[in-house]
Length: 466
Ligand SMILES: Cc1ncc(COP(=O)(O)O)c(C=O)c1O
Image (spheres, rainbow, N blue to C red):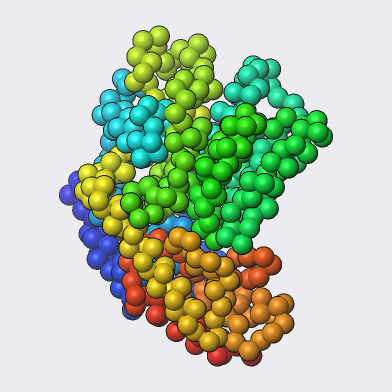
């Protein structure tokens, strides 16, 4: 009976996986923290529990989690779980290795190198350096670090006077760029937000003006961040236009394509990232639209050697890295020492679906987003708050309410009730001070029935609010 725990766990996995798309089950069970602590038996005791109890604990835990593979899960920029992705994750955990040296992770090293090179080719780079990070936020931070090290080459040794630096981002850029500036000693004052137009695109004219103003004020601009697939609207900055600015002003161009990069798989949508080959670095999160299990994020750059210069401390890390084997010791290009093999689940899933599988998935998501957009436009009580560009649809309930504050409050109430009822999950955000609901099509289980159901549920809840 040595393996009874594992056998039991795999039974639980099979059962939960089987019912992951069951529409009759709630996406989320509403519990207070006290109730949930009791249900989970969250406290730890002096003595351990037997296998049966442990299996019950695991089963309860999974049952109490938000069902992120449910057809009504429309909330964040990720979701779903393919069998291949799960299999890849299991293989990763089972081999439990850290990918810092060839010596300890030979197979993982080849897989990671292959994935980096392949993603790099989709960005139009024949030669690429890169690394898997713990998420898009950290990929962005690493990009800013590379840029900082290029323009302030002493900073690795001497430290920085961040007050003299400036990085330019879209007003709709992800908050991780503020966090990165904080961590890198630049501070949020050094992050200059550039206004966006009605399509949610950063204005390159406003950018040029801001760069001049910032130079005049005594700061040194060193980086522009384009976002392709903004968090709320799903808007795409024009890489080509921003690359022109960066070329003229001698600045590093980072592209945060955490969400939007998979459009590169689609002949229909790759124009959204036209000019990507001109970028200096790129964030790409396979754990978002590609549905690879969390976490799986990549930072890529066509500048060979920069990552190694920034991240390598070989003399101090003599207990880990040897003088030989540089090319295959991927830990020399990472901010982490111990590191999971996140490339494996991407590789397994890619082997399973092939590149055409990614293309089909992305195009299906956009088709569904268009379908939802059409429902909203046609519905007398709903409003499409901004143009749909990709897989995000920003909408709100308006009905006959005319006061903007009241509309905002009304939509917040709809969303709160929706989460409590547990039938659908969708996020709330602001677009131009308007409170919106933002369904994202980023989960293979979502279909036409999900979208119809979501609209019906919104209207039903609205009718109960007074
Ligand atoms: C545009 C964009 N960049 C970066 C991130 C951060 O990614 P992660 O959550 O993997 O840190 C997000 C997250 O939603 C995002 O929308």
